[in-house]
Image 1 (cartoon, protein in one colour):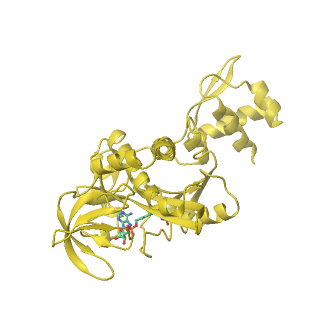
Image 2 (tube, rainbow, N blue to C red):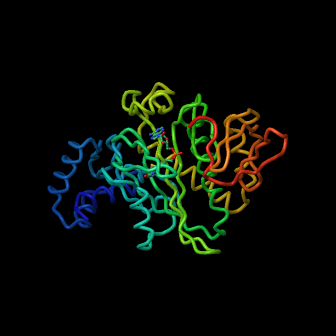
Image 3 (cartoon, rainbow, N blue to C red):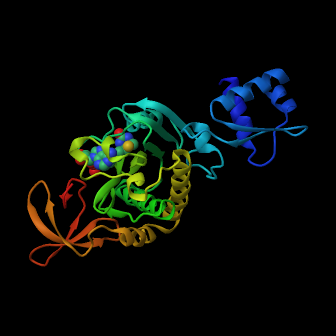
Length: 326
Ligand code: BTX
């Protein structure tokens, strides 16, 4: 690790108060003037540093860019995001997270990138991930529940994003079963849950979230321009990415712990409060057939409840169904 990295880490550990130049110089094995020179360098990069006589230094604010430090600064989680891997460009954060998990990355490890060149959605679809304008991240989870419950993680993640978009960004999100967050019918975010399991045991889950944050409409490729949106387009403001990421991480940890303790019932209630087109008749396509059905809500295990044209209730489990317009 570089001196600079260690310096930021030392300063980040105190939120209030100062770290003395003496201590920095000792811990980093550099001279006091060298400490001062590093501070000047940090300021050039957009860090706001306060130097108080006899007290030392503190970081007043981080530059408005995403890094391990800017995300973790002031983040109050116990396990989620304690290990964080940030990259500027990757093919897909899912791929890196799978690699990390296979190499033993702990529960709660997060991989995040400014840009993905091969972002993926479900069923081999692609996910457009423009540089610096969205949040493209994957979480390594190592839950102890049985594999059949893993689709509930997708729904849990969707409610967390909806909760943050509503509470933090003041917009009205809707969740389209199972994995899209919409507003006014346009897609703001998508979730991709990939499972690595044996018959009755989960090795790990990679939970991917893609969130369009500061995109102006022109940034989206032509073919999705009429069905995609961003938090900026909807709220009229730009969002500081590191803070928004922190908010999502903190909310997710809290909701995940509730889910592990109390089960799916609370998630179901919250999910249904945001459910998209509940009560409406929509076109449904499975591999076998196409029909119209009325969306009733979700089952106590997260499956979609639909009443078909004959009035019969159907339970749809497969992630391989399409409904509404995509
Ligand atoms: P999905 O299969 O439900 O949605 C993919 C479809 O959404 C595409 O076919 C396209 O029509 C549309 N689409 C593509 N990009 C966007 C976008 N930026 N905004 C709105 N609509 C779009 C949803 O899949 C799951 C996406 C997960 C993405 C995350 S990002 C971090 C992680 N890494 C990775 O490669 N994937 C996940």
